[in-house]
Length: 165
Image (cartoon, rainbow, N blue to C red; front, side):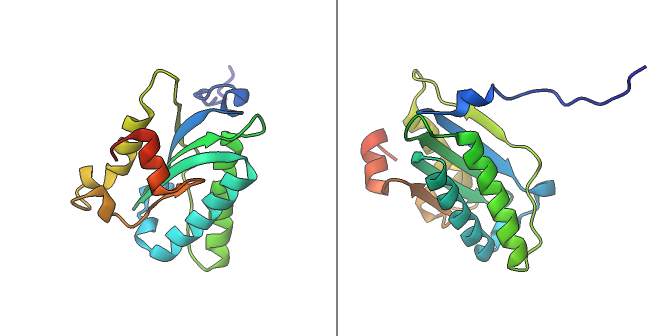
């Protein structure tokens, strides 16, 4: 009797994450440890995300670091874009650089993802992502949360694209 434990496949095929697609990702720290209470680790992670975004042909993005996880919403710029490779590169760069800087840091093995469909409200998803610290009681207004940012655009461009932030 084969007692091999097999992991359930829960992702789409890799090619679904390539090209001009939009994906949202929630990436938790190992054991949900609140590593991102430390601004130095947030800085390392933001630099790693920015580099992975450029390297894998990101077009526009929004990110937010909570104490024990990160939310990333990104789109691909062209046919060469690869959102899975972007997130994988981001995770690897963050761990490597954190360890080099003397931090003990680890991500959970996997992450949650969702590809945004054409009929879904992109703006509603961005607003939901940005309001996460408010829902958790960490600040009164999402604008007050320090560990957030945009990629490939400005806050003004994002607001024009989605309406009210």
